[in-house]
Image (cartoon, rainbow, N blue to C red; front, side, top):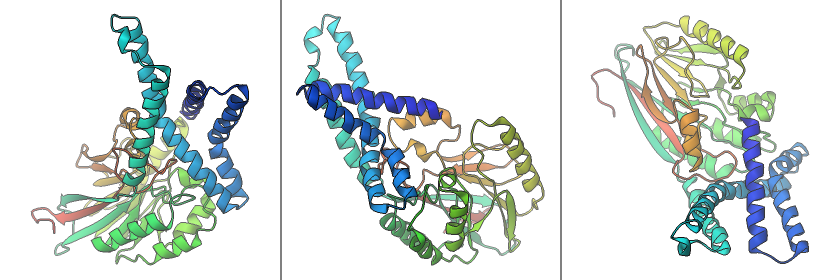
Length: 376
């Protein structure tokens, strides 16, 4: 998958270079400079990491904004440009050749669509919404009332996502007044230099039953040691292939992130999940935290609700058309077999381009209530 995405990204950069060089036809010198500019933008993700490793915060942020916005531009420009090229090819070889688009239009139309979509998506990414899910169960203790749990996922605190987004998330959590907060991975993104103060801010969120977290794939990129240090400073209890029981009211189990495509490790993960969940009391509601949205084989019936993230619901159209087929559980709530269920969050932040389109960011309020009672 990595090589497929890399190949498509390289092809998209080459495509927009060809389109731009035809549109801005100012000679070989101009094309050479244009090619170097496109190459620099294409390599921005590598440069971000290099400057982050050198703890050069400002250059890293400059390359992050320019490079990732360029990436967002490509996501829209490349497929829309290809579609227009196909349209032009078809009408030119038909009786409707007069409806063919000019070379300039073949560049300007997808460029306009891409720019306007990314501008809209930049503001949509800031439009954090609250999704509400009510789960009725007979497994709460008598007189226990209800449990209010806030799920945050895929916040991606890092070079781009910082104070403003985190403050917005904290404000929403405090408004919801939960009993517990859980993070289902990718709370931080890659290298997290100069971000200790963000952990301090998160540490001020203190729900009565605590905060629990698991590790996502992006949190490995900056080093697991740094991630664990940040999460612990923020007041989270990290659940890596282990479970805890909170006041005989709820079981919370957390599974480690397993890179996709590694069959042997996947089998080990299945076995670990079954072992962890089998050791929990079945008369208590069991919440399972797992970053990816697949359900471990043989675990349905051993948990009541799995909370996941990772998919971002594609984050941007048309990427979500692909992720719909890549992930069986793409977004939202799904009832599984044997009384289990899964909820997949769209995530609160962004990965790569600070843009969302047709996939608003969310935090989720899950209210677990005794069967027969009404949600508050």
